[in-house]
Image (spheres, rainbow, N blue to C red):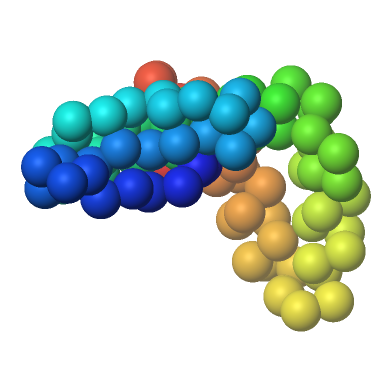
Length: 96
């Protein structure tokens, strides 16, 4: 993310050790927090996008039946069938 620098005027700056330049300066504490949150959210969004498209290393998209089969050791057949039915429903807007 960079080096956080307290400026003589009491404001904050962030210095990139990769680009070797200041990325933000004369910022308040709140502005630094907002800037950092936006950067992190962009990175998380990118990782999530790779995950759901199957392009995230070590994070495969798994087949429902194989997951249920593996989980069957810990659940009753009735519970497995309930899970299968719930996960097969059409839910608007992605559902949870």
